[in-house]
Image 1: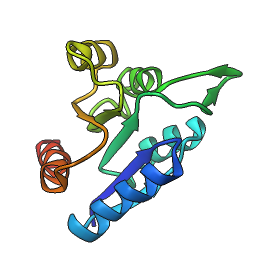
Image 2 (image 1 turned 90 degrees about the vertical axis):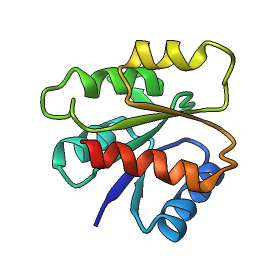
Image 3 (image 1 turned 60 degrees about the vertical axis):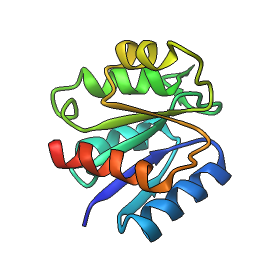
Length: 132
């Protein structure tokens, strides 16, 4: 069974994404915003992709606040997790943000909130997992 880790600090978004992926996409989901848990899941081999919120209000790593870009950089620079597909999710979608976020983080994809087209959302995630 394909499992997606959702890294999201908003419980409503977490619930919405979980519902879309499980009910419409037939995927399993796990959710956390605790950086150590994200790294643990990524290294465990239990997950097939990560949906990473860019703006994480509560995520702290080694005593410092970190956002989704930073966590993605950490995962992409680790030989154990660099192949894991990571899709950034953000509400701050201004012109040019997409390229900046992707270049900065090394992420594999980008989705802006709110997610309106559920089918396209699922397809983007599934196609990245199939490529991996």
